[in-house]
Amino acid sequence: MKYSDFRSDTVTKPTDKMRRAMAEAEVGDDVIGVDPTVQKLETLAASIMGKEAALFCPSGTMGNSIAVKTWTHELQEVIVEAKSHIFNLESTHLTFISRVTPRPLASNRGAMDPDEVERAIKIPNVHTPETTLLCVENTHNNWGGAVVPLSNFQALRRVADRHGLRLHLDGARIYNASAASGVPVLEYAKCVDSIMFCLSKGLSAPIGSMLAGPRNFIDFGRRIRKALGGGMRQVGIIAAAGLIALTEMPARLAEDHARAKTLARGIAGLPGVQLNPAEIETNIIIFGFEHPRFPVPAFVAELARRGIGVLGAPSGAGIRMVTHKDVDDADVEAAIAAFRAILAG
Ligand SMILES: *Cc1c(COP(=O)(O)O)cnc(C)c1O
Image 1 (tube, rainbow, N blue to C red):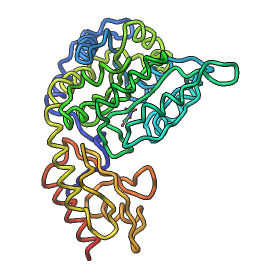
Image 2: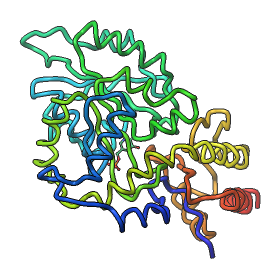
Image 3: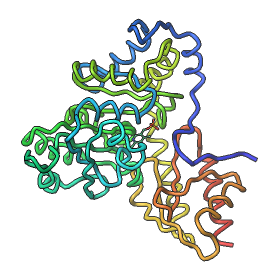
Image 4: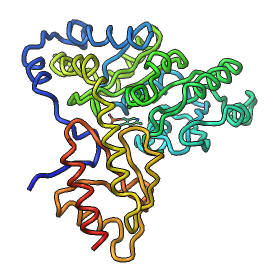
């Protein structure tokens, strides 16, 4: 039986072209700064994002960890969105590595209210931490791949400037945001001091994320990366796949978004499925699920038995499905058919 894997876009396999590029990559020891393929990737990423420099990181979590560690020090506070990946899903590096206080704020589908952010910024005094960093996310994972509008970024930039805050963008899926909104990634990046984005996930590289920002930020970040154990040697082998991810894969993301909409429309309205297809903007579908015969884990297992992979949503009361390069129209049809067979029967 074919397995249609909607658990995440992290399951994407490298393309044949990536595998060939990996085999043929020119490499050197990147820790001493002599891997030409990594250098090419870092230069390209910096120029696409309009930043002075970029750093190749083994994961998005490490990229975000390095950004927070580099922009802050202890006795400080970081404003984060309440459902953000950086606050909820990165094993507490804000406190564990950077030793800063996270200040979570609610949002409207990932867009924090600039006035609320401004009110949350602390005036330096002896009692409280100093607020020095604001983190934003686009697309917003836990808000079901929501696209945070450029106007929100611009408003948050003005707040950050008034109070001397740094602004970091967790843009793990910034290319999905761009594909859905038509706003070039550079326009989002222009609003922030630093950006992290993933080459894995929808762009289908096997490993790797980029962190881009000012030269001295990246220089210090490189030392933090080494301290965290992220200094890698002939890593051009992986960067070669990253170059293809960055140059060739963004163009196909709209296809994933169209399939997510088709899938959402196909399962909305079935018994137990609490989903408004109009809210699906990119490749992530998160929906509430409540059914008298199927608790979420039982339903997930029943779908798996029929060859459809989904995940329980982080909230526990719902389900998460993600479209990507390695699911096609037939996989979407198979998923809709499995939902109908289980729930309409
Ligand atoms: C996946 C993801 C990350 C980090 O990714 P890893 O490479 O798995 O560490 C960060 N932020 C968001 C929003 C993500 O979806």
